[in-house]
Image (cartoon, rainbow, N blue to C red; front, side):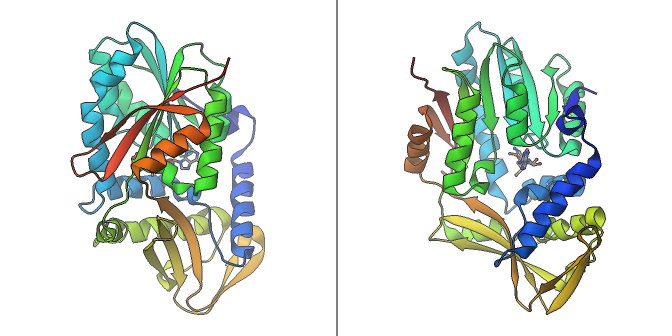
Length: 332
Ligand SMILES: C[S@@+](CC[C@H](N)C(=O)[O-])C[C@H]1O[C@@H](n2cnc3c(N)ncnc32)[C@H](O)[C@@H]1O
C-alpha cells in the first residue's frame, strides 16, 4: 500500500470519522436554512459518480482543463531545471488530468515525487494503484485525509521545492472569504519560491453552466442524492431519496452555481446515529454546494491578497477554464 490514512496515523477509528459526519449532519439539519458540507459527497460511491460526471458531454471543466494540462508540461518542466521537486495534489480524485503532466515530466527526466491527497480513500487507493501500472518509475506517496490535516502532515517531510496542484474547480467550492483563508493556509505551509497550480472555472454564458450542473442523464442528480444515501448507510438514516429533487441554479449576485436538494413533501426522517427525527417541510431546501466562477481579474486579486505572485494564466481554446501558476512570496 503506497498511501497513508491520516486518521489511522492519529490512531483514530472509523467510528470517530462517523462521529464527525454525524456532528456535521446534526449542525447542518439544525440550521435555519438546512445544509450539508460538500466534502461528504466523496465516499466510494460519490467518487465513482463524480468520475461519471467528468465524462458527461455537458460537463466541460474536465475537458477544458485536460486541454490546458496537455499543453503546459514544457513550461512547468522548465521552471525546475535540474532541481529535484515534490508535487502535492490536493483533492486529486482519479488524477486523470494530472497524469498528463506527470507523464511529460517523467519523459523530460525530471527528478520528482508525487503525493496525491484526498479525503476519499477509494480515490487515493485507485489512483496509487493505477499509477503503479501506468507510471511505474514514479515515486508516489498517497495521503488519505482532509486538505488541512494533510498539508500539516506533509509540511516538514522534504526540503525540496514544492509544486502544489489544486485542479478542477475545487477552489470554487469555497465562498470567497473561505477561499482566501484556504489559500493563505497553503501559503503558510509553503516556502518562498514554491508553486501552486490552481484550476479556476471562468464566468461564461449561464446556459452552459446550467447544462453542466443539470445533465440529461441525471448523474449529477444521483451524485447529490448520494449524500442522503450515505447518511442512510453510515448513520442509519431513513431517507427515501425519491422524495427529494435535485436543483442546480446560477446565483448571479454570488457569481456561483449552487446545488440544492428540495423536499418534495412534508416529511419526517429519523437518523439512528443521532437518535433524532428531522422535519423537512414541503419545498424546503438543503444546500449542498457552491461552485464559484471567476474573472481573470479575480484570479490576479486573490493571488495578491494571499501572498502569491502570478507567473502565468493558461486558458483553454473556448476561454471557459483557466489554470493559474502562482509563486509563494515571503518577505525576508
Ligand atoms: C470535484 S473533485 C475533483 C477531482 C480532481 N481534482 C479533478 O480535477 O477532477 C474533488 C475531489 O476533492 C476531494 N475532496 C473534497 N473535499 C476534500 C477535503 N476537505 N479534503 C480532501 N479532499 C477533499 C474529493 O474526494 C474529490 O476527489
